[in-house]
Image (cartoon, rainbow, N blue to C red):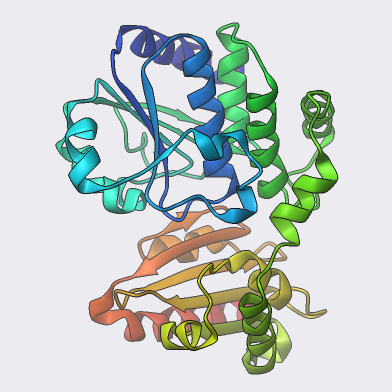
Length: 334
């Protein structure tokens, strides 16, 4: 992308001068974050750089088919805090604020490393890093990583192709969302030529729910809240219920897909109680209502059609009610 050419060159200079590089994504990494981190990690490995790819939680089994599954580490303060703090370069993928780093936020802020952010979410100001590679028009953060690799003449091997495909396919809903266009499909065709098993990838990402997860989805369907003539649908999943069902691998996407499948639905909100008392919020819109704007009011962010935040434990319930009221007013005015 021409607009980022100069910053791509600056990024390359930082990479070439760094002896130790850490690459990570936002907490609860989704397909785009995973794909972007994986593609950049592999590129740096191919170019002889010393790189550590790090996530704040184990990779979701839905991405277990990826070669990246053998090439990352889960952040552990006892093992990795010093590594992060002594790194020369700290690269963040698919996030627009340091707060989305989760457990990595404090060690990253304490690090002597130069910071780089690669992201396609709308962002206020210049971005959270020393060098920000931001393009809100990009289909996925993985696409920005791909463009950087091509810009510097890097090799696209099967692992990079697989990683970028995961970014593109998940952030387009397997090419069903409005951010799918001819340019995306041309790139997908090129990536698929690297011996990617697309049916197997689809099954793993979208058709691999556990029995407890399927029962949870059924519970959400029975207990969902419909307001504004069915245009606003929301559900609240409590932690105790997850424990009672035996849900050990919780995925929000299947629940969100269910909630927004209603014929009248314009906006969907999913609230999930976390183990520490905070509440994770996922927002989706099927029309022109701005979920990023709503999420930003409550300390989060994202895209116009898909955004999220995490509500503080201290005022989680009050904030949840306030957020629902905000959505209700938005839908009523639409």
